[in-house]
Image (spheres, rainbow, N blue to C red):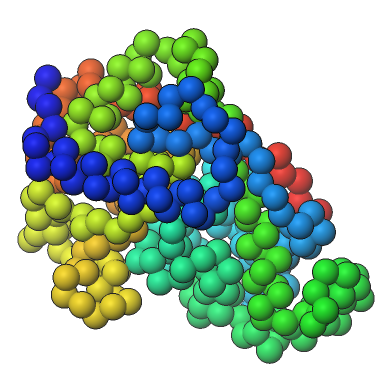
Amino acid sequence: MKRVPLFKSACLLVLLLCTAMHVKTAFSADPVFAREEEPILPVPLKHDVSLRKAALGKRLFHETLLSGDNSLSCSSCHDVTRSGAEASSSSTGIEGQKGVMNAPTVINSRFNFAQFWDGRATNLREQAKGPITNPIEMGATWKDVIAKLRRQPDYVRAFKEVYREGITENTIADAIQTYEYTLVSANSPFDQYLRGDDNAISEQEKHGYKLFKEYGCITCHQGVNVGGNMFQRIGAFLPYFNEENTAQPEDLGRYNVTKDTRDLYVFKVPGLRMVTHTAPYFHDGSVATLGEAIDIMARYQLGYTISKSDNQDIQAFLGSLSGPFPHEETR
């Protein structure tokens, strides 16, 4: 079994220290758990939100009036009764237009330090605004959305109950954000293991976690969401984009936001909490299976070719990260 090289171990130590600082300042403290030395943290069991705002946000999340032709809602691409992600490589927007990016899961997205693959939104409130006015997604304007909602007496009343300013662009986004804060998959088998239940995961899952750390996957995938708390270049060890895999504009990653050449092919590291349920994988949805994604990451990010058995054990571990899906009923 190959061990993580010294330089990777040093990077891991720095990243874990930064991650711990970020988690402590961004979220309320979780009850003390048994394995505090582990680089992965359990999803907190309690999340304080305004229930009235969350209820309003839930309605808006499923509201087709937020789209230009009243045909789409946020839940069209993020079905939280399944995985909260898009099952196809890219989403279908207004008038059947196809996007170019894979829609990640909204479940546990509150634990991401930025939103979208390129990190252009710093929080879920900013993220909620993006698709509504994107011409190939929901294709609306805020003027029209606000006007449509203001013609609905139940929405006017609901907004007035929780927002003094009533229906505005910011209150719509804030309500959706508050609802999305409730979409967490707490108390997964691995969380139970972290809190001291040694029998919560199988021996194969334990071995998969050991491999996950030894290969160095943990360098970028740790913290509460097992990722989602840093940017990283795809192809950190070997170039990922080449003549057979030509880079498209959407492949430029964070460069599209910063225009800094150091950000070429840099993306937000995805969280892995729901990864066994969210195929296809990568920013463009080009990888069909989790096993293939693991092989690609091992080669291009870490410089390893891993065995089939190691791959299967890592997949088993990743399966233990998923907690119960949030119970959801549309109106």
